[in-house]
Each structure stands twice: as structure tokens, then as C-alpha cells.
Image (cartoon, rainbow over all chains, first blue to last red; front, side):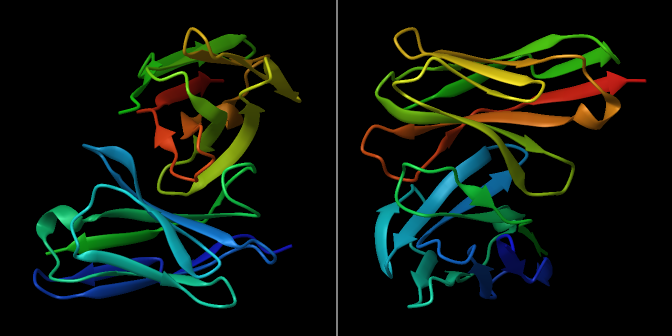
Length: 113
Length: 113
């Protein structure tokens, strides 16, 4: 069974631009969560989706948004990029909410110049 | 707010040694605890998941224990190998069963051949 895939793997953007990242969960998984990883803050939860509904959101500004499609694929969008948004963005999928192991993708590394 | 701490931050051991990584969390109201490994620049690989009602889980040379009341977990690695070199992260999920994992800062393990 294919794992979690994320595209693109690398991105370079400039301040003020916006970016969209994509995540395809493991087949059959309905829950997708997003995390930001930086050297200073470590791994921080962004939001989670289940059955196309946002179920939970972390403490990030409104510039960070996401959505989930009927096939469980998810996208996250960051508008008006700031230098501090440079990070590794990871998504994870699981069968259901909270009871199962979460499987992580390889991440998208975003560099904001 | 849940805080997760991992000690030590870095550890170097000669090949073949047994070792223990520590994880502590401030709020014992957790649903489960997971241990992950992360190779440089890569995503997270799930190693073990312990439900809050369990005391330990084993997989091959890995054994994880959980003492929920004291807010502690340990990951025991037997007969370490150079391939075990990675950063090890523990993460707890809230009792609500939501997928917003709270991650520790990680222990960077180096196994010297």
C-alpha cells in the first residue's frame, strides 16, 4: 500500500506570496493532519481534517488555512508569506480520529526569501 | 497546555549497547503516546503506539513503556546498530481522541560503529 505522499517536496517563495501544499493520505484513511517543523519551535500542530471537515486547529494565524476533498486528499494554503514560515510541513494520515497510529509523509520543505 | 520533554537532547553510544530514551509530559489526560524516528530532512516513521490503558509495547529490539500517572514514557533500544542513528520523538494525543499530537523536542541518537 502506498504511503502518504506530499507535493511538492521543495519550494522557494518570496515574502508576500502565497503557497499551496498538497497531501494524499494512505488509501482508506480519512483523517489528515498538518504539522509545521522548525528548528526553534519543533513540531507544531496546524489543523486536522476528517470527512472534509476541519475538526481541530492549532495556534496559528489565519494566514494558514486548509481543506480536505471527498477523496480525503488535503491541501494547506499559506497566504502573505513571512520569513518565519520557512519550515518543513508534514502531513499525517490515519484511519480514524485519534485512535490509530498516524503515518507521516516525507514533508514539503518551504523556504521563504 | 500539554508540554512534552525529552531527555537527553543528544546521545552517542557505541554499537551493541542497550539504551533508554526518556519522555515526560505534564498532563496525564492522554489518549495514547507514540514514538517516532526521524532521519535528517525526512518525515516521521512511527515506531510504537501505546494506548493510555497499556503499560508497554514491543516491536523487535524496541520496547516502550508508559506510566501515565507519573507522566513518563521510556523507549528501550536493545543491541543498538548504526542504522538506529536518527532523532527519536515522542508525542501524546489528548484524551478527547483528537489527532493534534503534542511532540517532544526529540533525542538525537548517534550509534558509533
